[in-house]
Length: 153
Image (cartoon, rainbow, N blue to C red; front, side, top):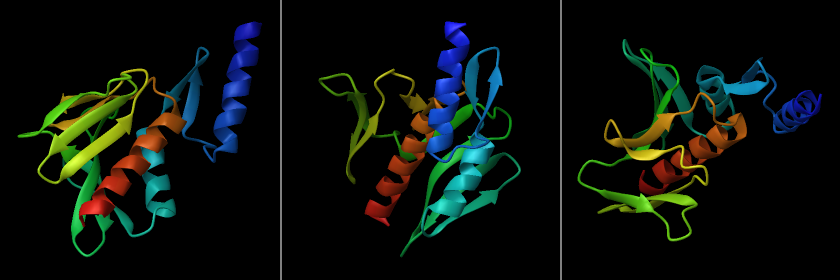
């Protein structure tokens, strides 16, 4: 019964953050639904649009210059890719191992990732399989990618 109580607490915590349908319960595990999180980003973040291509869904920051900052391939809806590209950039873990750090000509970009769910080599972007990540953590990553895009736009 303790497992059910913990799951209910987690669901209530997610709902308090505004995630009313970003998850579904399978067994007792909360699963992230990226499509819904992308829709929320478009609704909540300033100057953001969501566009569809034949192969992916993209979040775009529409500042002085447009910057794509998050991608969700249609062929694998569990995968998330985020700004910045890691091609020709180095990436590593911070000394305390809580951040994924990408360094390049346009600056240093950090993603809070204490559970090491992200990599810098996800099709030459920051990303990974986020199916079992907490929706609140994925939302934090989307917001971080948005801030990185704003900083260079």
